[in-house]
Length: 376
Image 1 (cartoon, rainbow, N blue to C red):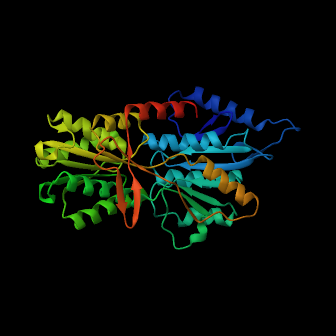
Image 2 (image 1 turned 135 degrees about the horizontal axis):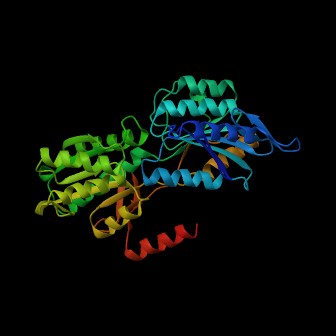
Image 3 (image 1 turned 90 degrees about the vertical axis):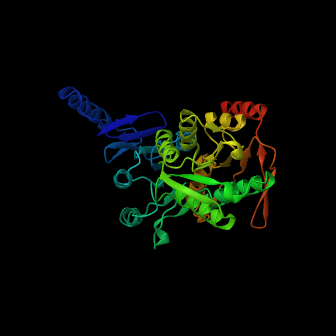
């Protein structure tokens, strides 16, 4: 096991023993140094890392770093739950494996953390390990993806996006755009790039397309698993293009896959754009975090992006503050999200009985957004 320490958080991961005895000796030395704490120190041992008694101890199991959204989500929580803010954060990257997350949660329990924050890989298969956390009386805060368990007391609260609403917004934009441009449903051939199967984002965004396709008589000619990554998005889009020459819309469940899809489309000699009646392939997507994706939106190579807001740090901190005060946070807490397009054809969409404004992205808007991010 490799221990990575920084000022604000600890990462525990796996590494290959490439250097034989040297690495073994180095690890032994690290463990000796960690365990040798002065008597006056506030650090106590819990498992194999030092735990500060005077800080709120939080174990965060992040499912991976498969996308720019995921990286931003991790950074938000890491930059919020700092020592300066009164926290000791133990961070683990599960590398897209649920088994790694289960092991991480068990380590957190052994370390005696006060809270566990979990961004689950998939919705199912959490009963056993979360029952162990419940038995240890450690509240579990879910972020981003939700879980499907019969016993709702296995987690304290969930913070995240309404993935189905995101999909309903994007498909409403598509529906209104096609009507405005007089594009008949019979002319549309949609290729669907799904995210990681069983993930909440995949389920909600896939359901949204399925419902909209039935309602509008759209034809989805292919559905492929792109695993939320750019490389896989390019791979499966190439497959779709080879098998379905008439595809003219790509519905991508995140921006990284959309960027891969654009690469595949352009490599095939086809044009990415919104004029689907003249040979273009329209790409719609989700997230709105990736800088390259927002640039492609402004260039017209992505027609529409449903925002998925990743900055959960303050909401997690607020939930912990409430629990520290003996109050219960809301069981479900949704973040507020918008929808982006650089095409001013549609400036407002309607989902159900509610209207949502469409943010029309310009070069100035992108520049201002970048400056805001640089300034925190």
